[in-house]
Image (cartoon, rainbow, N blue to C red; front, top):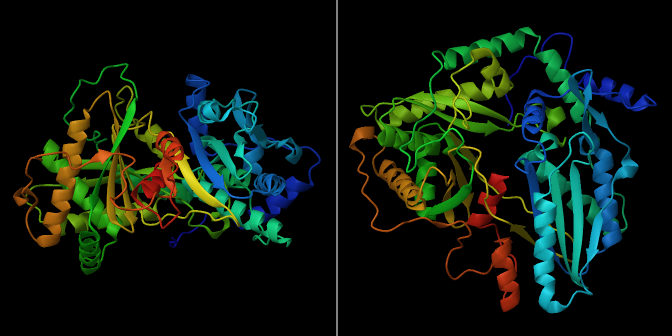
Length: 520
């Protein structure tokens, strides 16, 4: 996405081309500043060292003749191309700074499990995966990217890629696998990989952001958000199954529901008629439901934005994503069409001011803090309308996942557009909510969306929401009936399918594939 945006005088992202060249010319790497989001994660790491909470792992099964040396060469090329993948974070006179290490330090870890007895091989692989995925990172030592290859047989491998969130985000993972596909394919074909030259590195962006936060544009954006969040409104207070304790944990669980392609298409048509995007419409429906559940008329839901609207950042791996609090006044007297118009206005305004780091908002506004809860935001809302899965020549790929173990918010909603319709997923804090409560929540969200399709002019208070007779949601891992196994599987289920010898051929992205991608 793009937007009109005035950069502060005296500095621009394109100017950082010169800065990048100067950094390359230096004989010794110089410490670089951290971006605002990196600084927050660094402080969290100081408070809770050796925690895997901010690991971003992916586990991929590769079936077919893998050329291991070319895979390692492709991974080395990516690490060489993106400096942030070689970063570590040091204490420099009491302040954190990032230092870029040499390219030669990268290694692909390898475990050959072929000598392990067949009856023990799967269990050994699962143990190694758990070890690699849950293993903590030392930000001061690095590396903050770990890659490990398990060889199960001559034609079966598992690739584990794990990054700390301080160097990556979801967009970055998409870039990583896209470049792996292009470079590995070129190497197998014996041609030179052709990737666009990077105009900047992430460290350049962090330096630019620090300068930008002294600019008039920063002050303008800060004023916008001060107006948006005037009065320091509280986070949404959902009815809980268990009381929130001071030391409430973050044990997570997930559920998903599903709407048919017909309802999905009807929602798209309604969004077009109201000059809104599907994201805006679905968010409006969710806010209407929150109003009905809580009675609150001031609803804030957090939503992450990619913050890559500058062309220079589109192909750079790093932590650019920023969570923004989307505030809407809701009342039962509003029609859904009126609520959608208000949500649309709020989303457009937030998008045009998305460079404002959430951490700076909290620092400036100093809202009331609740232990274990993000200021302003108890609920995060994610929307994804596609799934981009890589292809490697001669190989069949299946993405594996260990499932949800932690919840960073009370509830995180994942909405995904897939071939089979619309997926509505929820990751929730299992120490606050029962599974049946979340199942009911999802079912009523589905009911509300169907109701507004039928009559978008009805008032919010008039929308009929019945109690579920049975949970409409199912545990995350759902696939539609009578379909082949997807290119995404939960790890335990995948090993079960292996034992039953019925892993099917790949096909288009399904519900769980996209929800998994959005959840990273």
